[in-house]
Length: 518
Image: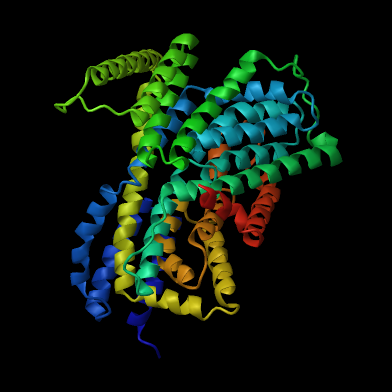
């Protein structure tokens, strides 16, 4: 009979899943299980408690991680856009653009979901907003209940794969650490890293692939089964209004500013996140009554300031500063004051409508949840390694039939199954640090690997019984939509998700072409 202490790592993982299924708070469950098994391992001789001395350094590393600092700003960006009801304006505008196309309203929902995904990156906010706005519209247009629920639920999850997203930020940090660890094990001490920009670039085209699959399925179903997706009778739906184009172009401009600054190397992810947060505040201010020309003037002033200051920097504290430098510095100061004045006006409008407080509260709640989980997972992974779990994972991967591809297929299947029960944050910060180094050592490209894992984790939002998007939509859906309708509606889209993963598997250049180009 084998020694029970040799299986503590497996028991630890099983105990964690059991605690989460019982409804205990996730962060406390992770940390509590880790501490409990650390002492159990010490009593049985399976672990040295002195290993926990590295815990303080790990927590400090998480709190000072320059990559993770971007998360609160991206969350604020999404919450401001969600609270200011930008989604409603977008959906109305996109419905006018799509016109009387069969299945056009469903197409509008998918496209709006993609735009909100790239604007907010917050799945919960997008699904709830779409459930409150788009789902009743689809039902009034005569869409089949399960189909309408599936479209809304799936479109909302695009915020996890289309950058910027919190998933991709967390994943870039995990993948970079795993990639470096794999290089150290190969004997390399001058190691390469993976940046957030690299992961954003790698995920962009696969995100468009998923959007294309959703659109193709929606149009095909509307053509094959017209009763499931009838033509929406919208007034003047064939006319593209200037206001509709303006409502669409504003989020697109914000997306280009954020992603363009990262992919172009102009700004770090944290700086780009601040651009997104300020842009979201300006867009919300215009929605709440600040004149459009005023908002445009502020946005142009800030844009000109960013471009000019990067091309023609001035150092007025230097003794050799010329009169031209002082003139340029004065111009920059004027641009900054104009931009600041418009930001203040937008914040004042949000405060007057009682939108800023709820946005900040929601931002703090989401950010605290994410960081608490990451810190607790640091404790968990430290104890798991101390109990010998890392060696067990490496042994399992190396013993998989089919070599590197078999090991990767096993890991993707494991992530998919865990997605039925666990959140993407828990899977990312607990499981991935254990399997990524081994997969990279087997020869898999880390960026391609990151995209496959990201698409797989996105699927976890749709898989019953604990898919988060299912719960978000259940809370926002009209009474006539049942839980079974939602479950039945997402099944075809889960199949499309798996098809998307298969496409990226067989055509890896979809994930690696843009990062190579950048």
